Image (cartoon, rainbow, N blue to C red; front, side, top):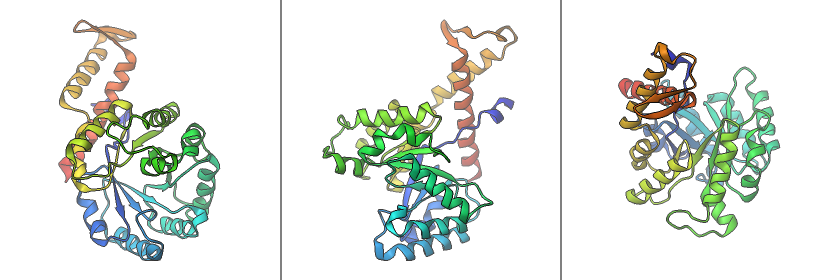
Length: 297
């Protein structure tokens, strides 16, 4: 379908976090069915292993063929003493994006963007912002429109709970208002928003329930801690067959000659607006991307 070319939207159902000091995990990651990999140099890597982790990541990227996964490197904060070396590595290996941890102010995005431009002037590398603190939540809207603005906001609820004293509970009732605030900030400025990790990778039912909740809240996908979570996240955040069939019907109806110039049409007894037409085209474009990647694996 010709219209798909103009409605390419990122598919970010499943983003697996991989510690860069784990060589076996680095080797396995490119063959997994996740939409993206977040190569972590920060929380999951002990201070004494930071240099080793950077070397591991450089070697992994040099050995990988071109990947259909989105590749993101989560760096350490600049003030940690490790962040600048992390960005020098980023300029060498050229991932798709850099994830900044614990972002609280828009100027942090600008500072990293400026430094990255100095290290890699010939390549534009996207920035992602991890929202993991109370200040980050309160400033999510200004972070979303920062200079060199982020392409994604990623929620870090473990740190957010630690900073606020909110206890981990099924359903995340006391976190939901803050999560929705982050979703709203991202959607208001055209930025994808990724839900936080679910810590018990053996609890499939609990993870599936949180994926369903996150999808209903408007998240684009979920950050994962284990490959066992990939299929469940893909299923919940991806378009299901019924949604695809409905989208195809909407596109077909709006493309009929008699629908040209109309903003509202009647489809099987339901009033469908042109905004639903645009949503349907985006969904079909995402479904086509998912199918193409599976076919090439």
